[in-house]
Each structure stands twice: as structure tokens, then as C-alpha cells.
Amino acid sequence: MARWAPDAALRLESAAMALFAERGFTATTVPEIAEAAGLTTRTFFRHFADKRDVLFLRERELPTVVGGLVAVAPPGLDPLALVMSGLETVAAGELQRWRDDIAARRAVVRSEPQLRERERLKSAVLTDAMRDALMESGVTSADAALAASIGSALFDASLEQWLAGPDDVLLVDVLRAMRARLGDLAGR
Amino acid sequence: MARWAPDAALRLESAAMALFAERGFTATTVPEIAEAAGLTTRTFFRHFADKRDVLFLRERELPTVVGGLVAVAPPGLDPLALVMSGLETVAAGELQRWRDDIAARRAVVRSEPQLRERERLKSAVLTDAMRDALMESGVTSADAALAASIGSALFDASLEQWLAGPDDVLLVDVLRAMRARLGDLAGR
Image (cartoon, rainbow over all chains, first blue to last red; front, side, top):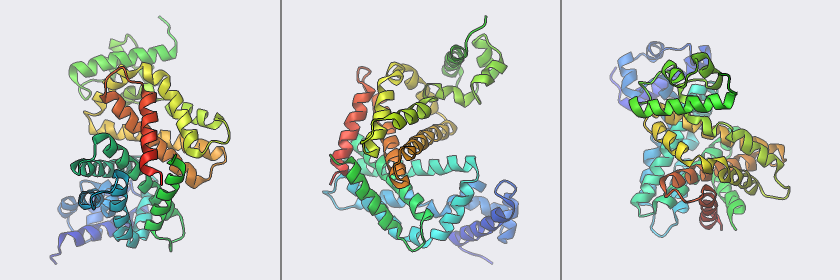
């Protein structure tokens, strides 16, 4: 049965998560994941660079999407507001719907130091995408680096708090509260 | 010739940096580093977990030192001020004297994706140490996580800007300017 690519990626992710839960991340192999999804190993590697990558499918497009949002944000906003506008948009969209999936994959990531390194790399890719988008919008490199790093720190802390809390809370509300709290702490 | 430990670590670091510059990080082996330093491989592994670790010697004690400074900071400061007080103290100390060494090792780190992942891990260890110290001082976990992440982002951005700039600038001044700029951007 022919299927379009993103669906295959989601099937592979679903099969992988079931196997990780059953036998652990380390003991699961790529051929086993592909077989459980009814797909080939070749198809697996068309969608993922390696076994670790399966855990980051839901956030894979974030840097591109947020970078794009920052680039088209209304002019006149300061650099931190530009970054927050992009982050709030993604927080209110798919991420919110995917809460349970993200929580499940994060539990696996936290069980393996190697996976945590990959997670940090993903977070750095988001920071870099926001910084580049700000610089393309004419923000100085110093301000762009600062606003992107701060936005990324706020986003990571918000995701963490949101996933640890009750499931009827909106990620975008956590993010806005975190931004407001930063204003209390950092404002002079 | 018997020597005390930190001196051996510095000799190994110096030998390693010369070899990395000459033939590249990947092509250099631990036995070659040990031999160039006039020490054994066994001694190398008493000081470093692996070849990558040599590049992070100058920042190895940072999380412990900053965590300790945050824990003994005067009461009454808000969480971000506590973190900044610890970071400013280390910025004004050995880091300032080690500018050229840190710049040289960072050039190597930036040449290898694997090393950048390790660098991010070190940065996360600093964040965690500050967060834990804040929580031990009675700061709520949400504020501790936020202030530690923001402090870490300010510190990383400051190091980056300081190393890229002229060598007569003080790291602590860059850090304070970055903090002030955050106040402009984040204050409401």
C-alpha cells in the first residue's frame, strides 16, 4: 500500500514508541521498528537520520516554522517581542494537540544521556534559526543573539513546566506567564 | 618527575592543543597527547574522561563554583540577581585571565559537531547547578528554572561576544551590559 511520506513517518514513530516502551530504547533496532510499522528499513532512513531522530519528529519543523514566523512578524516590534510572537504561534498550534506524544517521547529522551545531548542540539538549532531570522529583519547581531537565546530559554522552561503540569493547561499560557515573570525579574 | 594533579592536567591540555593545531582534533590520539606531555595514558585518564574533555578543562569547575557562589549570596536578592552575582564573580576571575586559551579551544570545538554537542552539555550542567543552588536557597522551582536558564543564556551570549571582540574588553563588563540590555528588552 503506497502512502505519502509524513504518514509513513508517523507510523514509524508510533511503532518505535511502542517498542521503546516494551523493551527500552537501546535494545530496539531500526529493522524492528520498520517491521513493526509494516515498512522497510530503507523507508525508515528516508524519514530519519537514525534511531534517535524518531523521538524528535514532532519538533522537527519548529526551527523552520518559527524562523519563518519571526521573519514575517509585523515591523516595529522589539527583538524579544518578535521571537515571542513566533513561539506563541507554534505553542498554540500543533504542539498543544501533541501534548501526550511529546510527553511520552520526552520520557524516553530523559532516560538516555545520549538522547539528552541530541535534545540540546535541537534546542540550539531553534535558537540559531530565530537569531538568523532576526538578523535578516535588520536586528543587530548582538540583540539577535540575545533575544534568540532568551526566547529559547523561555520556550524550553515553558515546555518543561507544561509537560509536568495538569493536561488542561495551555502551553501558550505557560509561555506568556513565563515571559511576564521574566519581565518582573529582569525589568529595572 | 612527580607532579601534582592540576599541573599534569594543564600539561596534557597544552600538549593536546599543540597537536590539535598541527594535525587536527580527529587525527590526534590520547597516547600521542600523553607522550607529548611526557606523561602516561593512565595519567591522562586520571584527569580526563576522553579526548574531548581536554577542551573543557578551563570551564570544568564552573558549575560547582557558580553553584557555591549562588548558595552563599546575600539574602534579599531576587533569583536572577543571585545567579548574576555568581556569574559576575567567575567572569571577573580566572576566565578573564584565560581568554586566549578559551578562544583557542573554542576554535577547535566549533570545528567538530560532536564537540559542539559536548559544549552544550557543559552549558546545561551549569544551568542545572544554578537551578539547584537557587532551590536550596528557598527559591520556587519555577523561578529557579527560569532564572538559571536566563542566566545561562546571558552567560553563553556574553562569552561568545567577548571572545569575538577586542582582547582588552572585560568579560564581566560584557556580561553586565548584556544583563542591562535584557532589562531594556524584557522590562515592561
